[in-house]
Amino acid sequence: MAPTVSASVAAHCEALVRAQDPDRYWAGLFAPPDKRPFLYGLYAFNLEIARVRESVSAPLPGEIRLQWWRDVLDAIDGGARGDPVSEALAAAIARFSLPVQAFHDLIDARVFDLYEDPMPSLDDLEGYCGETSSVLFRLAGIVLADGRDPGGADAAGHAGVAYAITGLLRALPWHLRRGQVFLPADILETHGITRAMLMSPSPDSPALRSALADMRRIARDHFAQAESAIAALSTEARAALLPLATVPGYLARMERRGYQPSRTLIDLPQWRRQWAIWRTAVRWRRLV
Image 1 (spheres, rainbow, N blue to C red):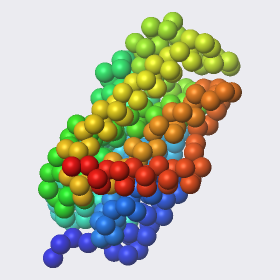
Image 2: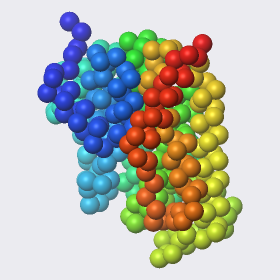
Image 3: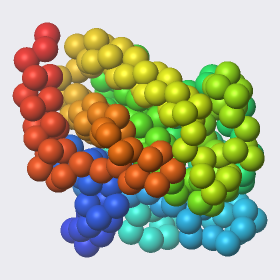
Image 4: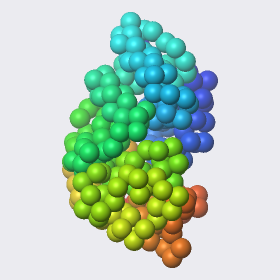
């Protein structure tokens, strides 16, 4: 019998994703109903890993929590279960033969979140985005392709980088408040920005605005490359990348008058996000 997700586990994961990752929740509604519990299981796992930093007071407890998830993954073949999210994750891995190593790599990349080390370079940032965001698009695509290779690896790769960089720019106020800098050190150096300047009471200098404009251009470049590669992704798997549809709207908000990078919280009304996702879903269905 194919692994399934119980109604209570599916409801738990769906509620978690709807509350904390609405872009992926709304995009998931364009997936076949029988695939949604597995998708929301993947997304709920991602949320659990991504929010470890916020749930601990020091890196060591965070390392312990991430190790707990590694142990869950190592025990999946033996049928081990821990909580609703791990149950949904185990079912998705078993049913669609998802590569367990990809989840380990995602966890390993998230260790960076626990510390206040600088992001050394743009290449390092793109690698981080690939292991934490692109991989999630790729795994969701495999689920929607019913365990087959959905193609479109370049689409998932660029989509993940565009989406993750945009998310990091949106989260800049929170990151600065907790002493964390995801902006690449090489780009900051190009603009003459030091960590001390970013941690100052008034970091919103013309130099920072210029550096952030560079980051938005990088995000848009990856967005454009993802869009051009979508046709190589199987039709049934394209819904996995639909959160990407919100990227242009978020980036445009950062270019409005009055934007203060260290203070302005970037968001879009729910109807705008839903409209962008729906319109993109319709357009992508027509691609051949």
